[in-house]
Length: 442
Image (cartoon, rainbow, N blue to C red; front, side, top):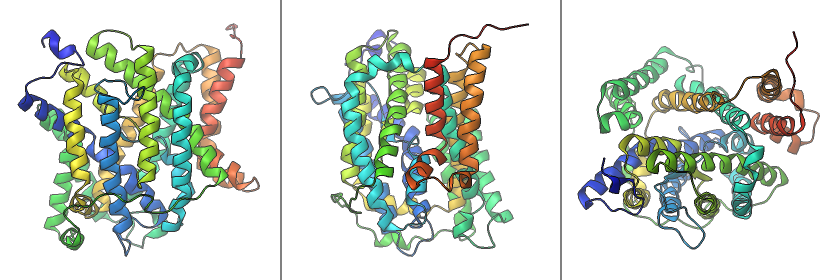
């Protein structure tokens, strides 16, 4: 790859730029809309609900405002944006707190979620100038554990979807062989495209795996396209489509997870500059990227979208292609915004059987956990670090698995602690800063 491709300001030929930009969107498309589907499902307004409009609105907002946040990163607006090829998308990190916030509450439960997201976006903006200065408190032991906990907390959702839905909302058909067969088709197709495909076939393996499962489901009459035919061809997002309200539980939860999201972005920016340009990220780039995280989350929440963060799979794509041009990602972001302005696309996504999505997210959430393990590989496993990791993991995972152990605590504490991620992160940070080295004794 020529040196010019390593320059973020280089603009490759238009045809090449469009193709590479669309490739970036294909790599993140499914991951970007999945959190909206999961949150809607937890609220009881997802797949199978009588009115699919709220889910379509959330999917549409996920696409539009991931594109907008990406444009803020690549083009920049004052201090907002790193001017690097960073792709923004709906963050998985917030799911462990969003699911209990809306669980079974219907559309009305979303207003508190968006109140929390708005406050989280503002907090993220305020945090941005400080992020480069607090990196010392977040060694790989802490960041790796947090990412691992996010993945582990979501795997249950993938299995539930693969088995046919959420048991509390399902029927006796939950866990039937047909559901598992459809999910397995998606998993095998995804792995097949990833390992035996070349170029775009390998990069877009998740999307192609879902399309394969969708085709199989269509053959067996599982697809209902009525919602697609009823949806409009073009529609601008509306401000606060689900209203907004403010609760202490939502605000505190979002602000705490913002810390996790900010650290993820710092890692992604550092990885892009190191792998794509062979240098360390500057403080201006780190601060600008974090500003864009906060601005993207704030704007998305105003229009029914969920919190944004940088997408690690696209960082890997930059490393794989060697193309560092931010203009390539800008074109991809424009394509994503245009897709989000067409409600028929959101309606088409809603027609995907829950088992097809399940087969996909089982792999995606497993990859989140694997990414955490990869980060932990940088840790020197002394007795001290082993004890910090063991204690934090046991408490965090244990509280998530047994939420009834918190039933006598105030509701705010229950939501924060049952997420698993927050108590694990808190313990790891405090112990990492406070505990002295422990000499190994024979």
